[in-house]
Image 1 (cartoon, one colour):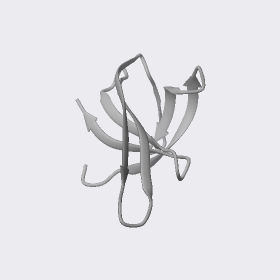
Image 2: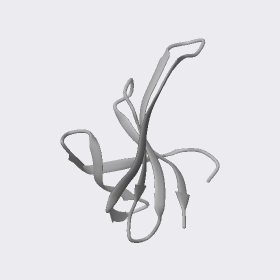
Image 3: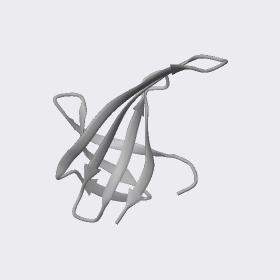
Length: 80
């Protein structure tokens, strides 16, 4: 995967942790959140803050993140 793709986060647990999402027309149910971290930095235009998660589904493991400034979820990486 070259760049992050916008995804639709369809459910969250406790309003924060990914529970299920739509990617390329397919629903993925999260079985486990394996890791979470926050990226916070300033670039030349704005402050960048993201909540990142490595999640496991029945199909694969994914790295997804929530861009807080844009209130948009992205899929950064899919691993088998």
